[in-house]
Length: 113
Length: 115
Image 1 (cartoon, helix red, strand yellow):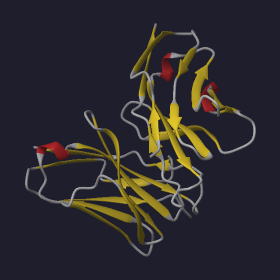
Image 2 (image 1 turned 90 degrees about the vertical axis):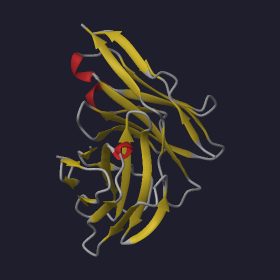
Image 3 (image 1 turned 30 degrees about the horizontal axis):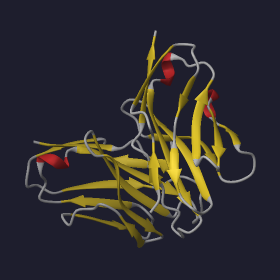
Image 4 (image 1 turned 90 degrees about the horizontal axis):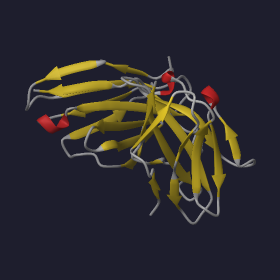
């Protein structure tokens, strides 16, 4: 157990729907990162939050949004889902700002049918 | 812009043989380097990291990596692999100029252990 909790572990939904993925960072970690991993695109950085504020944006689609709440948990919202959104979505967390590396959760596998 | 190149998408190796997974990066400033491992159907786990000091870094599960500044490389090695090392390995880098310490990732190398 890495200490980063992601729910749900698996999600199957239809095209056009909206889903919310949840992440609880490791205790004491202020930064949360969201990644998408698919077979054809590899590991893609989506967005970073630090202590409730957005810090960096990667290849995140306009249909996707995220936020970090005062208790530091984060949610990634995916809307108007397409077949191509099927992927593993990882959350990672890190402590205070610094080159300490990330701790990853076990991911949410999203299947859009 | 920074980039990380993992030269091999797959590396097949016999059990108990040594292995080297290659990683090169492009950056003109001081960097911090990481290797992560992803076992099948799991998240990524930190294997080892180089922040400063000794260029030879030892990690978990018998892995080590050597930082070579002149070659801009951070290759991962293990003297004798086991079936349990079957996984995908990712090299990542961040630099001192990025206040967010964002990690830039390589495309990953799949280590395939042949019995």
